[in-house]
Length: 250
Image (tube, rainbow, N blue to C red; front, side, top):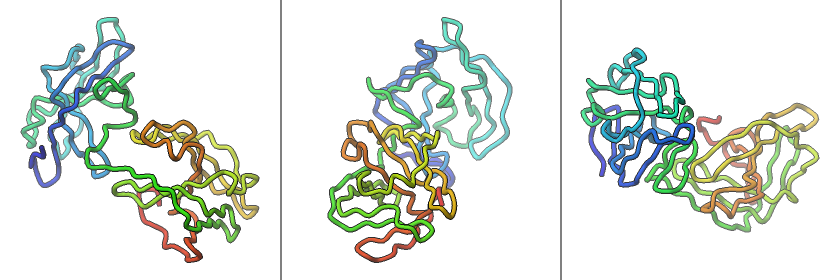
Protein backbone atom coordinates (compact mmCIF):
# COMPACT_ATOMS: atom_id res chain seq x y z
CA UNK A 1 0.00 0.00 0.00
CA UNK A 2 1.39 3.39 -0.97
CA UNK A 3 1.70 6.09 1.70
CA UNK A 4 1.67 9.76 0.74
CA UNK A 5 4.65 11.05 2.67
CA UNK A 6 5.67 14.38 1.17
CA UNK A 7 6.07 15.91 -2.29
CA UNK A 8 9.70 14.71 -2.32
CA UNK A 9 9.49 11.17 -0.99
CA UNK A 10 7.41 8.07 -1.62
CA UNK A 11 6.89 5.35 0.98
CA UNK A 12 5.19 1.96 0.66
CA UNK A 13 4.61 -0.86 3.12
CA UNK A 14 6.04 -4.18 1.92
CA UNK A 15 4.65 -7.56 2.99
CA UNK A 16 7.95 -9.39 2.45
CA UNK A 17 9.98 -10.77 5.30
CA UNK A 18 13.36 -9.01 5.18
CA UNK A 19 16.46 -10.13 7.05
CA UNK A 20 19.92 -8.57 7.20
CA UNK A 21 23.11 -10.38 8.17
CA UNK A 22 26.56 -9.12 9.12
CA UNK A 23 29.41 -11.65 9.30
CA UNK A 24 26.80 -14.40 9.39
CA UNK A 25 24.89 -12.94 12.35
CA UNK A 26 21.46 -11.40 12.42
CA UNK A 27 21.22 -7.62 12.21
CA UNK A 28 17.46 -7.31 11.71
CA UNK A 29 14.44 -9.46 10.92
CA UNK A 30 11.09 -7.91 10.01
CA UNK A 31 7.82 -8.66 8.28
CA UNK A 32 6.92 -4.97 8.15
CA UNK A 33 9.63 -3.23 6.11
CA UNK A 34 9.11 0.10 4.42
CA UNK A 35 10.15 0.76 0.82
CA UNK A 36 11.37 4.33 0.47
CA UNK A 37 12.19 5.98 -2.85
CA UNK A 38 14.97 8.36 -1.84
CA UNK A 39 15.59 8.91 -5.58
CA UNK A 40 13.59 7.82 -8.65
CA UNK A 41 15.57 4.75 -9.71
CA UNK A 42 14.88 2.15 -6.99
CA UNK A 43 13.67 1.90 -3.39
CA UNK A 44 15.59 1.50 -0.13
CA UNK A 45 14.49 -0.60 2.83
CA UNK A 46 13.73 1.03 6.18
CA UNK A 47 13.12 -1.40 9.05
CA UNK A 48 11.18 -0.86 12.30
CA UNK A 49 13.50 -0.16 15.21
CA UNK A 50 11.79 -2.90 17.24
CA UNK A 51 12.90 -5.51 14.68
CA UNK A 52 16.62 -4.66 14.88
CA UNK A 53 18.63 -7.33 16.71
CA UNK A 54 22.09 -5.76 16.42
CA UNK A 55 23.48 -3.17 18.79
CA UNK A 56 23.37 0.36 17.37
CA UNK A 57 26.17 2.52 18.77
CA UNK A 58 25.72 6.30 18.31
CA UNK A 59 28.26 7.66 15.82
CA UNK A 60 27.34 11.28 15.24
CA UNK A 61 25.08 12.97 12.73
CA UNK A 62 24.92 13.47 8.99
CA UNK A 63 24.03 16.59 7.04
CA UNK A 64 20.39 17.60 6.85
CA UNK A 65 18.44 16.27 3.89
CA UNK A 66 14.84 16.29 2.70
CA UNK A 67 14.35 13.42 5.16
CA UNK A 68 15.52 15.52 8.10
CA UNK A 69 18.55 15.31 10.40
CA UNK A 70 20.10 11.84 10.37
CA UNK A 71 21.52 10.19 13.46
CA UNK A 72 24.29 7.76 12.50
CA UNK A 73 25.09 4.47 14.23
CA UNK A 74 27.80 1.83 14.10
CA UNK A 75 26.26 -1.64 13.77
CA UNK A 76 27.62 -4.34 16.11
CA UNK A 77 26.54 -8.00 16.21
CA UNK A 78 27.15 -10.34 19.18
CA UNK A 79 30.22 -11.99 17.62
CA UNK A 80 31.95 -8.60 17.62
CA UNK A 81 31.79 -7.73 13.92
CA UNK A 82 31.01 -4.08 13.29
CA UNK A 83 30.02 -1.84 10.39
CA UNK A 84 31.06 1.74 11.07
CA UNK A 85 28.36 4.39 10.65
CA UNK A 86 26.32 1.91 8.60
CA UNK A 87 22.87 2.67 10.05
CA UNK A 88 20.85 5.82 10.35
CA UNK A 89 17.62 7.10 11.86
CA UNK A 90 15.56 10.21 11.20
CA UNK A 91 13.72 10.67 14.54
CA UNK A 92 12.36 14.11 13.61
CA UNK A 93 11.79 13.47 9.91
CA UNK A 94 8.98 15.35 8.17
CA UNK A 95 8.12 11.90 6.79
CA UNK A 96 6.29 10.52 9.81
CA UNK A 97 6.60 6.87 8.75
CA UNK A 98 10.41 7.07 9.03
CA UNK A 99 10.67 8.41 12.57
CA UNK A 100 10.88 4.97 14.17
CA UNK A 101 12.66 3.21 11.29
CA UNK A 102 16.29 2.32 10.64
CA UNK A 103 18.07 2.43 7.30
CA UNK A 104 21.13 0.20 6.86
CA UNK A 105 23.80 0.86 4.24
CA UNK A 106 23.33 -1.94 1.73
CA UNK A 107 27.00 -2.54 0.88
CA UNK A 108 28.09 -2.51 4.52
CA UNK A 109 25.98 -5.58 5.29
CA UNK A 110 27.05 -9.13 4.40
CA UNK A 111 23.70 -10.42 3.17
CA UNK A 112 20.15 -9.28 2.53
CA UNK A 113 17.27 -11.77 2.29
CA UNK A 114 13.77 -11.27 0.95
CA UNK A 115 11.91 -14.22 2.47
CA UNK A 116 14.57 -16.99 2.18
CA UNK A 117 16.23 -15.77 -1.01
CA UNK A 118 19.24 -13.44 -1.23
CA UNK A 119 18.76 -10.13 -3.00
CA UNK A 120 21.61 -8.11 -4.44
CA UNK A 121 22.45 -4.44 -5.03
CA UNK A 122 19.21 -2.94 -3.74
CA UNK A 123 15.64 -3.80 -2.82
CA UNK A 124 13.46 -5.05 -5.65
CA UNK A 125 10.97 -2.48 -6.89
CA UNK A 126 7.44 -3.96 -6.81
CA UNK A 127 6.54 -1.75 -9.77
CA UNK A 128 9.38 -2.97 -12.00
CA UNK A 129 8.76 -5.78 -14.47
CA UNK A 130 11.28 -7.56 -16.69
CA UNK A 131 10.10 -9.30 -19.87
CA UNK A 132 12.52 -11.13 -22.18
CA UNK A 133 11.18 -11.91 -25.65
CA UNK A 134 12.71 -13.78 -28.57
CA UNK A 135 12.68 -11.71 -31.76
CA UNK A 136 13.58 -11.98 -35.44
CA UNK A 137 14.23 -8.24 -35.84
CA UNK A 138 17.48 -7.35 -37.55
CA UNK A 139 19.83 -5.64 -35.09
CA UNK A 140 23.06 -4.07 -36.26
CA UNK A 141 25.45 -2.16 -34.00
CA UNK A 142 28.02 0.35 -35.24
CA UNK A 143 30.80 2.12 -33.35
CA UNK A 144 32.98 4.68 -35.17
CA UNK A 145 31.26 3.56 -38.37
CA UNK A 146 32.44 -0.02 -37.86
CA UNK A 147 29.85 -2.81 -37.68
CA UNK A 148 30.49 -4.55 -34.36
CA UNK A 149 27.40 -6.78 -34.24
CA UNK A 150 24.84 -8.03 -36.75
CA UNK A 151 22.06 -10.34 -35.60
CA UNK A 152 18.63 -11.59 -36.67
CA UNK A 153 18.00 -13.54 -33.47
CA UNK A 154 18.09 -11.10 -30.56
CA UNK A 155 16.43 -11.49 -27.21
CA UNK A 156 14.77 -8.20 -26.30
CA UNK A 157 14.70 -7.33 -22.61
CA UNK A 158 11.99 -4.88 -21.59
CA UNK A 159 12.48 -3.45 -18.10
CA UNK A 160 10.17 -0.88 -16.58
CA UNK A 161 11.55 2.63 -16.91
CA UNK A 162 14.47 1.67 -19.17
CA UNK A 163 14.91 1.46 -22.95
CA UNK A 164 14.71 -2.02 -24.50
CA UNK A 165 18.01 -3.91 -24.43
CA UNK A 166 18.96 -6.17 -27.31
CA UNK A 167 20.86 -9.27 -26.17
CA UNK A 168 22.76 -10.89 -29.03
CA UNK A 169 24.51 -14.25 -29.51
CA UNK A 170 28.30 -13.93 -29.29
CA UNK A 171 28.51 -15.57 -32.72
CA UNK A 172 26.83 -12.43 -34.12
CA UNK A 173 29.38 -10.09 -32.52
CA UNK A 174 32.88 -9.34 -33.79
CA UNK A 175 34.53 -10.67 -30.67
CA UNK A 176 38.01 -9.87 -32.03
CA UNK A 177 37.14 -6.21 -31.33
CA UNK A 178 36.26 -6.89 -27.68
CA UNK A 179 38.75 -6.16 -24.91
CA UNK A 180 38.30 -7.68 -21.44
CA UNK A 181 37.31 -5.33 -18.64
CA UNK A 182 37.43 -5.84 -14.90
CA UNK A 183 34.15 -3.98 -14.48
CA UNK A 184 31.13 -5.72 -12.94
CA UNK A 185 27.64 -4.51 -12.22
CA UNK A 186 24.87 -6.07 -10.17
CA UNK A 187 21.13 -6.14 -10.71
CA UNK A 188 18.53 -7.59 -8.31
CA UNK A 189 16.51 -8.89 -11.28
CA UNK A 190 19.26 -10.21 -13.54
CA UNK A 191 22.36 -10.92 -11.45
CA UNK A 192 26.03 -10.03 -12.00
CA UNK A 193 27.22 -8.72 -15.36
CA UNK A 194 30.76 -8.69 -16.74
CA UNK A 195 31.91 -6.11 -19.28
CA UNK A 196 34.02 -5.65 -22.39
CA UNK A 197 35.37 -2.55 -24.06
CA UNK A 198 35.42 -2.24 -27.85
CA UNK A 199 38.50 -1.29 -29.88
CA UNK A 200 37.48 -0.22 -33.38
CA UNK A 201 40.98 0.82 -34.41
CA UNK A 202 39.90 4.45 -34.13
CA UNK A 203 39.53 4.41 -30.36
CA UNK A 204 38.78 2.34 -27.28
CA UNK A 205 35.18 2.54 -26.07
CA UNK A 206 35.20 1.40 -22.47
CA UNK A 207 32.57 -0.88 -20.94
CA UNK A 208 29.98 -0.57 -23.70
CA UNK A 209 29.18 -4.31 -23.86
CA UNK A 210 28.01 -6.55 -21.04
CA UNK A 211 27.03 -10.17 -20.50
CA UNK A 212 25.22 -12.15 -17.81
CA UNK A 213 26.92 -15.54 -17.89
CA UNK A 214 24.89 -16.92 -14.96
CA UNK A 215 21.80 -14.73 -14.57
CA UNK A 216 19.22 -15.14 -11.85
CA UNK A 217 16.51 -17.75 -12.58
CA UNK A 218 13.93 -15.22 -13.76
CA UNK A 219 16.36 -13.92 -16.41
CA UNK A 220 17.79 -17.19 -17.74
CA UNK A 221 16.77 -16.31 -21.30
CA UNK A 222 19.69 -13.87 -21.59
CA UNK A 223 22.35 -16.28 -20.27
CA UNK A 224 25.49 -16.03 -22.38
CA UNK A 225 24.14 -13.24 -24.61
CA UNK A 226 25.69 -9.77 -24.86
CA UNK A 227 24.11 -6.33 -24.97
CA UNK A 228 25.35 -2.86 -25.87
CA UNK A 229 24.62 0.47 -24.28
CA UNK A 230 22.33 2.00 -26.91
CA UNK A 231 23.19 5.34 -25.29
CA UNK A 232 26.81 5.02 -26.51
CA UNK A 233 26.63 3.19 -29.86
CA UNK A 234 24.66 3.41 -33.11
CA UNK A 235 21.90 0.81 -33.30
CA UNK A 236 20.05 -0.01 -36.50
CA UNK A 237 16.78 -1.96 -36.21
CA UNK A 238 15.52 -3.44 -39.48
CA UNK A 239 17.84 -1.04 -41.28
CA UNK A 240 16.69 2.13 -39.46
CA UNK A 241 19.11 4.08 -37.27
CA UNK A 242 17.65 4.54 -33.77
CA UNK A 243 17.79 7.69 -31.72
CA UNK A 244 20.10 7.20 -28.75
CA UNK A 245 18.07 7.07 -25.52
CA UNK A 246 18.88 9.47 -22.70
CA UNK A 247 19.39 7.68 -19.37
CA UNK A 248 21.73 7.87 -16.38
CA UNK A 249 24.25 5.92 -18.53
CA UNK A 250 24.26 8.47 -21.36
